[in-house]
Image 1 (tube, rainbow, N blue to C red):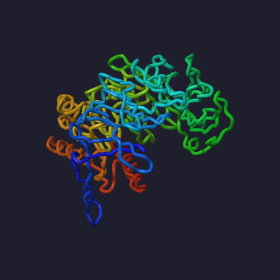
Image 2: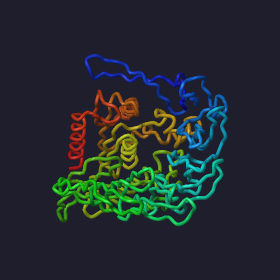
Image 3: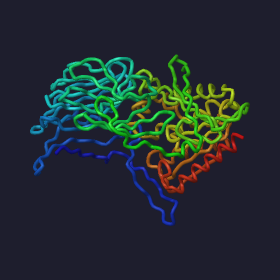
Image 4: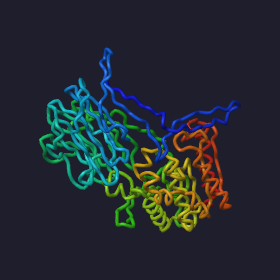
Length: 491
């Protein structure tokens, strides 16, 4: 049995105070703030009947690292992934279950950060599958038992989403990818001994698949921009054996919802940005409609909506994704503002009535766009926003920003607090007071900065909700308030 021992004693305790009920209480949460101490981890192996633990030496004693993935190989050894604290190194180790002795099979390194994946797949002959972004795009690799590269199974200027299954008898590897463009997700296969990539799913659109252990059968949830998800059973060639659920729900048709119009824009660095414009049903000729940029969800009734994949999003290669390295709140905000200016230029959009909405990171983006482009946005709704990255967790924040000590300028420039005085439009901040992810302290610090700048804002607090309201009544009230806020501000 392999297990981890986690020591959190060095992590500060953050108090979350429950104040929405007659009896108040304090919930103590150990939270690793960016730049602060992390948990200490040890990996142990013990016999199923008990006995002495054998500790696997992962890194030098006292070093800071993450242990994101552990699994057994077919031969009884333990495959261990070790990620450095700065997330620029990912090692794959093989540990002997009897002695704990570990050997480094491979190491992926990056000047920015390395995205974790679940594409490690041991094979019966001792080899294993792995994926890497060493070429600039995530691709599958076949590796020998000792970690040596046998061959790259996929290549090109497109990214593998994930390994989906292996048919070792037939020698085929199945995976989903953006090979036919970032607006699609298709199932493909390639032979273990090399050869061309073959597409399995024939229809355009988005395919979410689950395969049988031998890869002979696949359950495929397929949808497009104009059709709701259907559930299909397919064979390994992509042929539909039967329709499990045709999803003939009449409600979408009854609502008269229109499929989005896909658009492309150019970012400041020349990158292609893909977006989707959602129009209200029964649009009146000659009328100009208010518009909302949806960084993360949002209402659509009688407004034109835009969703844009800015630089920093996945499935477009490493250069596109890491464009915001060490500078959150920069290029992704620039791209959303560019998207809003495109939206404002559409003939049926009222450019004087633009809003933006987002939650969590999207809440940060919504508030930052409003502050950075006050001439463009009239209103923003920011839900559970991160306002200063020094108050968020180590693993997420340091991946993109490093630590506050080594990147003090980046942290300062990405904060909402120094630019709070730039607020001109309407702003609704929404937050749950017992949010365990983005602490309510973020909103409190933002309010203090807005108060100091003598700025007016609106606030919607849920005293007994977490990162996103979960209770049905609270969710309904939240949605109603957001719709009402946009209705008033964009009239």
